[in-house]
Length: 103
Image: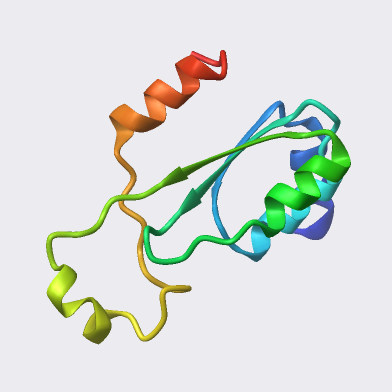
C-alpha cells in the first residue's frame, strides 16, 4: 500500500484493528474519536500507541492474544516475541466490539 493510500485509509477510518507494530504509527493520521484496537502477543506488551492515542484524542483499546498449544517450543519457533504470531480469540474480539459499541 502506498504512503498516500495508508494516510487516506487511516484518515477515513472510524475503527482500526491491528497488531502491535510499526504500521500503527499511521494512527497519527486518524481523526479524534477513532477507535483503535491494538492486538498483542501475551509475551510482548508495550504502551507506545496508547500514549499516541491519548495525545490525539483517539479511543484506544487492546486485546491480548492467547498462548499457542506449542508453547514449550515457542523459543525455537520465534527468535523474539516481536515477531511471534498472535492467536486472537474471536469471541473475545466480538465481546470487545460490543463493549465499545461497534457491534
